[in-house]
Length: 181
Image (cartoon, rainbow, N blue to C red; front, side, top):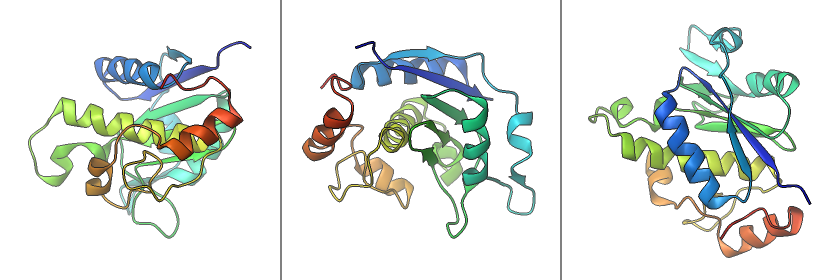
C-alpha cells in the first residue's frame, strides 16, 4: 500500500515554523509530508467577519475542500469561529483534511511574551487533532489524548500530541500502518 501524502498549505505562516511542524508530524504519522507554496490570504478574506475580527471556519473549510485534494492541512495566522462557539483552534472535514488557526495558539494572544517552542508544541497538538478528525476519529474523553476537545488554551497545554491507546487502535483499524508509534 502506498503511504498517505499530507500536504501542508500555509497562509501567512513562518516557513521555519511550518518546516518544524512537518518534522513533528513525520514523527507521529507514517506519511509523506509535503509543504505547498501556500495559499493567498485572499482565499481566506471572503470568510472574514469584520465585526468579529475572525474567520468563519466552517464555511472556509468547505471551500478549501473544493480547492485542495486530500489530505490537506491549511495553517492560517488568524482567529476563527464557528456558529455557536466564540472561537476554534481548528476545524476538520472528514475524508479531506483540516485547518488550524494560529492566533489563539500564540502566547502573546494572552499577554505573554512570544515563545516559538510553545507555539510549535501547541500547533503540533492541534494539527494532529484536526488530522485525527480528518482520518475519522471523534473527540476522546482521555484528558491526555490529543483527540480531547480543547475549550481553552489550558486544555491544549494539558494534553499530549499523541493518540491514547484507544484512539491509536481505532486509527490503525481505519488506516493500517498510519502511525509510527
